[in-house]
Length: 168
Image 1 (cartoon, rainbow, N blue to C red):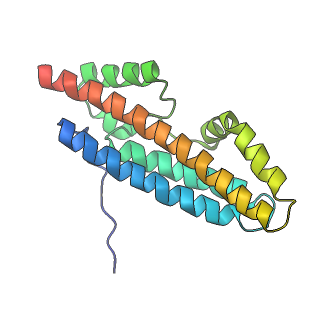
Image 2: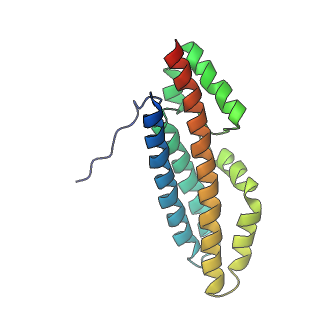
């Protein structure tokens, strides 16, 4: 069978090359999850897309944090100086989900920021076929945009900590 990659011990990338590899891997992950979200949005069941988006997005955020070495547990294992630096960098870049536990409430706050897209997606459901396709497209782009923003926030935080570790 398939064996899931164990990444609990993933560290913050140690070089620019590693950072770029992680960024690219996470962007592909965002693309796949956004496509899955769009597929679910095309199903004409009201509310199904919102519930699935919350679950998909929460899992996506945790996976991205883990890839960058920025889950709460991973940050907790850093030396105190670097731990503080990671949290300060997360605040500076506006990474509300970097190094934090992802809760339903946090995901809902993020999704509210994309509220116009979500409202438009729900409204298009009332137009048969074309509306479902439009809802899927809107959902894909909104999910992807939010995911990409999180990848970039994590990359900036990881880069700050990486540079500080190299200078010690």
